[in-house]
Image 1 (spheres, helix red, strand yellow):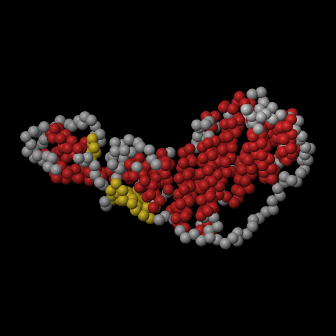
Image 2: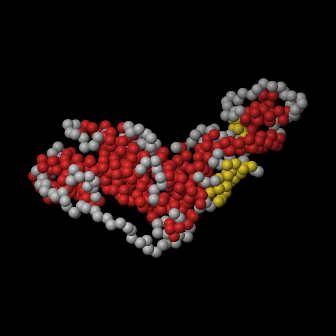
Image 3: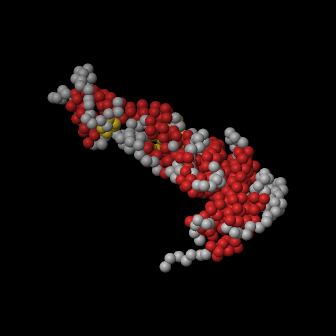
Length: 513
């Protein structure tokens, strides 16, 4: 037995009984459409609440797929979405003084107001069309006064005194460092996922697999919401927050990014579902509620642009905070197995250190190197290779691999036999097969073992072989940075024993941006 079909009259009566407050709010918007800045939080809250309830009711009866009611449902969804967007924008605008935002390139308050005006125009158009559609469906629409005080918002100046008892945090350094580190890692992930702020608005950016799809923005929004909750749980109303002026600034940047991502997510949803190329067939024969190019431009140039700028500002702030709360430690780690500190491991370590903005030194025997500089780490290879050559010569002597008076004077064969024997014992790694060795005769003025070790050192220098050793370096600096360096070392410094790139764990994905 199939589903029971409700009659149009019965369904219309049901919707009519539930839409009085909805049409009152929408009618107020239409009645005031010639005025500027009519949006208030009471008005938007009412529109959002009522449209949410009506949309749910419509969907429960399948209005989305019904020719007669699909248009009404679509307009209700638009009012719900842009009411939410406008509420977020009003929240940002009211909160800017409390956020204590660092300086960015554009006037953020002015830009926010411009986008709020843009959202208001869409809401007015949607409300106007909703009332027309309601009349077409013979739904009763009340007469609405344009002077109603029900939606006004009169806000006296000032704030309540901050007199709540402060909590005491025992491990201040650990708490602040955890928060700043979490922000830095999330900021790096966000900037990797999102296009740079100078990107031109193009449709492919907001496709299902694009960098600013609704799915990706929702994921980032959730991560920043979790970060804000972390702050409110462990830092808010503590003595630490009162005495460290940077903490409320960081909280403001976390919050503004969160609300910008929420706005971006809604814009992306509307673009993908209702305005973009994938949804163009749905609006054939009707004037668009919002032009897709304008929507995408707003999404990129306002939301993504300011997310990027506020992340950049707060990254510098977090690095400064981490330096202030640095806990110094040290960790002893094996040097990279493939050619020591060559390009990949040196670059990854440097990027890691610069990510946190902390001072980290690497010690190798009596020498000290700046771990934030790839060139400094490259320099350590001189000592590493010298140590490898020395250990190899000692191993050749210990294993008695060279006869000083061999019957066979074929130098190539002796060198190859020594290398193969060492390779069988995992003391040498051969990167070139077949291994080509220069044809030279032994020189009477040097010992054979010296000439063999010199030839092997030459093969090492040109990268045909490598020598396995247990050389270790000591990294000294911020404990949090050392934890990531240790994790990097445990993952081969990003490469296998043959120098091939390998995936990094999730905690270090920011190094691949």
